[in-house]
Length: 358
Image 1 (cartoon, rainbow, N blue to C red):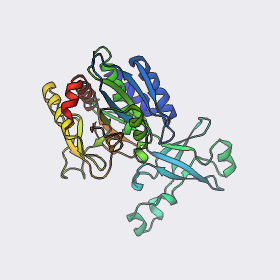
Image 2: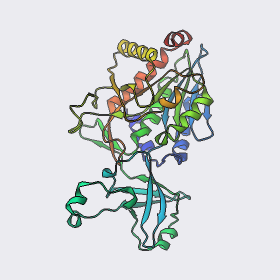
Image 3: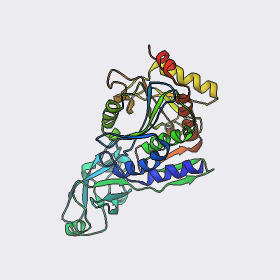
Image 4: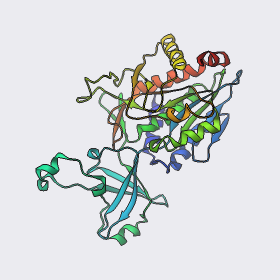
């Protein structure tokens, strides 16, 4: 477990929004190479480790995604304030007064704060509505445009949330930025680690795509290159166990096990594959939570319609406070998600893949 926590910390600490995933990819390559027979890379930046089947011709793709949500610099004003646009889905209400990191083209990291007005100067009407992103700015502690440019900051630079990785409460709860989806990156590595001494009945390709947060783009490329027979998109799901979230038609909760999506906004989990996963989980005594998401999607949306069609389902863990500067997941959910995916892979061979399809 200590190694898995360290893996999660290392990956979440790296900054990499959609289109800027290169440092995350580099670290993933370090982790994947020792446990893979072959490294597969696509032209947009996706990276995967392949473990060859001992007996079997079919291939399963386990795909997390490298990118996190963030921002991009769009303008620097004369007073040294930095305007930006969002990359990925943000709710304006979680953005003000948050620390961010601007990364220059040379790799220099500069801390800033998304500015806000004190409540003393807000009218009753202003207090009721979120601030538009177009009115927000980043303050890096200088007073003119030349000082900003002198630090190497320019239009097009990546901006990421700043949040430290920490263990909370009883030690089972972890908080960090970018669990969406460095969780999936870590799992793809840990599954290969888990299976490194096993003889598989299916070729395993496990790693992460790019640009999921801006339209599942890298998954299209990866699926076309790898041409899997089955796929699991590994991504976080929504926890409904906090005040304001409870009482909805969902019961997913931190600590109750990995999450399997029956459907999301882009994919209906393949029914044959879902039944197979249900049987594996029951046989191995792994508690699974089942859910659906109507207002969003995962890489499963692109993978399942790639090539001639790929039976695909999404597996993850529930996450609190998704798409903000911070999020919380449960260690045991992570470990059991690794176990579930590993057991699914071990149970697959040419015959079971054939039976899953209908």
